[in-house]
Image (cartoon, rainbow, N blue to C red):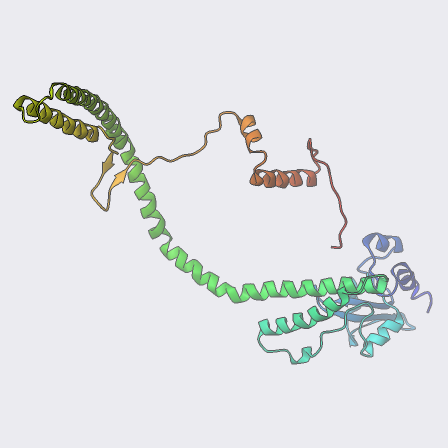
Length: 343
């Protein structure tokens, strides 16, 4: 009996009740994952699934037997997922008798009456677990048993999150598929006219730039003419004031009228000299030149210095520094920082 269970007892001694053997420990024990050993174990039928009890033994003739949750199973298929998880015989019989696994959080209450709707069922499960977990958080972890429970809670809550992501994807998928169909239907009609419109505008650039050049020439000529008329108007006004002796003198009245007329012509010339933007098209479809401002870096090093205190630049530098350090590269002005957290 002792010889048949020798491997099992060594494994149990290494990791303890409900522990998990590492690959290195499996190598030290000298057994493969395809060669079942007699003993008591536990396994999960699938990731994040519940633990199942596993018992493997040999009769007097060397015939192998295996039970998984009390059901006869081929030992080879059960062993692959159970070999790393030895449990004590006492734990095996306790769990088979209805008790909870040691170190595992108590099951949420009233889960047998969960709603039929998957969302409401998962929400109810989480709310129950959340209440228990938050109560657990109020107690400082000082024992391995408490640490084991904490580890189980993290796995359990993560499983709820994973399930929620999966259910959310399933429920949302029809809407995403329908949305993609609508997007596909309208994509060309939205994008191609806009792209073609932009091409037509770019096709007008040369014409409008030439019109702008002509306008600047016209404006320069008009400004010179406006300056000349303004000087004549100012001179006429000065002469009219100098010769003015009698308000009713015809000569005085003519000089004043001439000065006023020149002043009006000067104002009109100034208006004519104002810049006019080059345009094309009528009201409602008019296109004109517009100034677009962008940066053209002429000295990269100076630009970096000028932007070094910008919050977005700091965030980008930190992101790139993290990427470099995690890849094993050293950076001037950057030190490797390590901290350990439960994961």
